[in-house]
Length: 308
Image 1 (tube, rainbow, N blue to C red):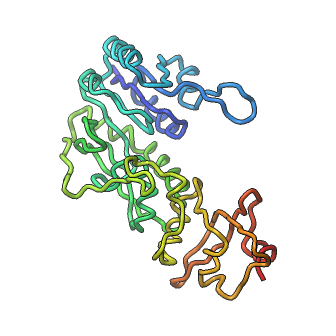
Image 2 (image 1 turned 60 degrees about the horizontal axis):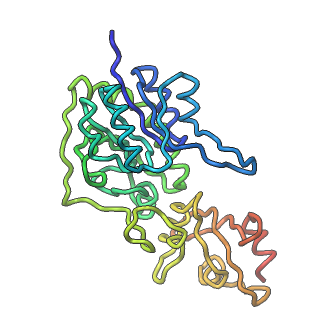
């Protein structure tokens, strides 16, 4: 039986398990990913896992550094030649040009890590944590001209463990997507599911407070603000781990109940990033920090070195 052809778009290594699962059930006719980047001290361009998969499996590869007019035209021509049944974007860092929308018979589907229409944008998991949501999930939706507004193919819901960092939560969702994505696409391609429009009136977006035109997280967002409760600070610690980590000044830390009976050993300004914390019986308990330009310290060692 002839397999459906899928073009897979991703600019990171994170959806590699999903790509491996898809390759067992479909013909991956094209992989679109980002040009190699310099990683670490080697100074040599390093391919991501998606590109490595394409090379190892002799799948046609299209690399993008900048999605300019020439690249758009090249990709348009290539897709017209390949004629995939479906294009799937998964952790793809570029906006898909409208000129490509009608090439695949079944359109472009995006994999988005929120329960749309909630948390549209690039930082959906972080905002679910910041918002203290009790559940989060995966939405497979058609791509249209606006940000995460297309009709929904399928959604999966999961309980959001409050102790998950955003890094752990993303890892969990990538794993869950790899388990279910083949069946989701099979049913869609077989017309067993019908796309449903989103409730646009219930939409929310992940706009940055410090850079409100963008839906990304910025370093400037990872701070304590006036009026933040212990619970809110706890959610920030989890949301901003592993990056950029909540940045606090020592005097801000001393305002928390956990440190209220302590004083700094000297009057120098000390900045630190909060790595880990728990929230027990209504109280925030910070357990690990990194002193700026220093090393990670468990909270006992930090107190011993900086407080009295």
